[in-house]
Image 1 (tube, helix red, strand yellow):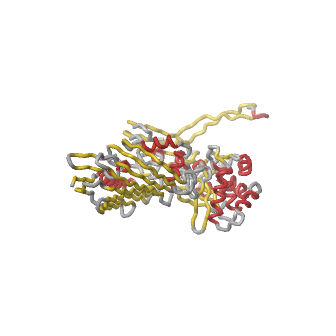
Image 2 (cartoon, rainbow, N blue to C red):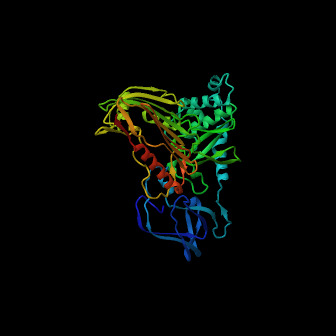
Image 3 (spheres, rainbow, N blue to C red):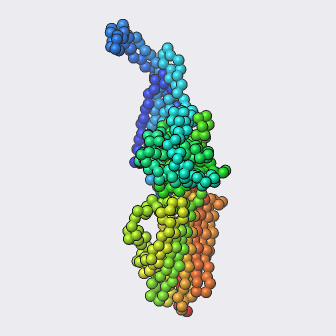
Length: 501
């Protein structure tokens, strides 16, 4: 490790390796830092004691000594003022961008011995894991046949089959909290006991999908807290999910998380790329990043009187990873506790008549409605009223504050947030100023922000929508993103000015 979460004034590091060992050096290419390695060598010798070994491995007698000479390769690094790793908003895992130097053993060549190669490729690593651990497990049935036949009776659609099997495994085998890409107990035992590690569960899932006539494959990956492997090694993986083909689409499934919808992965597993194992001979990289957009739609309608008390109703519909996050956070929270959370940060508000739909049914849109009364939601100066129309829905702060950024900006999933506000103005007032509509483009369609204002008599309609089409944006896009969200905050802070007629 060449970088930490504290700055380093001066780093001095040296590694000495005898010529018998051949290593390849790997820097972390995601780190913005560069290091120069100074290489040198020197002669080294040591005296070897030659002995006669007796029964049981004991030294019987010494026959003399010999002098062994060889070159010692020396690699050294000296660098000053190494900056600390910065924990910034929208970073997937900060240690993925640390300056690191890793050594890969490629071969050994000892005196009077042949060269022994250790160099691996991702193809060889994948093949060895498949042969050692997956071949038999994927072909093992018998322990679930009767149950699965009953569940799939009369079902011919492949998508429906895959969904039924996925939901069945989620309820049948609970995750014991242990990761790993090797089955701990095996699918049969985990099925019987109702509990298993990640590999037990997802390999059983793959086996069932194959049994049902679907094309299914294990996918090896490294979780975020395990980092990103720099060179081919079995230790580069610590997790496994399942891929299934339905028509022309490939869905990634992880049955360890009860709130995962079909085709969704938990956050820990969405770490750039995984290795899909078609069979023992064929494997390839596959993206783990979400492709489908998750949506959060809010609609708020309100009115106010001469006392400036706002009364209104809110409707919120969410799907995809927004819905999963809600279920993760609030599935087992009682209504009173959730109401306190809902009111927090919204000013002097009282929320009532809260209703929820589909908060438990994974894979469906969650709908939430409530009414509210809000005090001090606007300001009167002389005979004019100043109203920020989005109220508590407004974005008040730009999440990007630094002048520059060296890490990618990681949004976790493509998203669309739409906020629509309908306002009924009180009698005796008219609009003196209405914020202008605006449409902002981010890097030729990578994102858009729309702010649309309309007036029809005493009715105002304001629509705000930002649409982020990518999961990851490179550091080169940082300034554009910062300016983009500055415009969001700016438009959300503009006030409507009403004057008395």
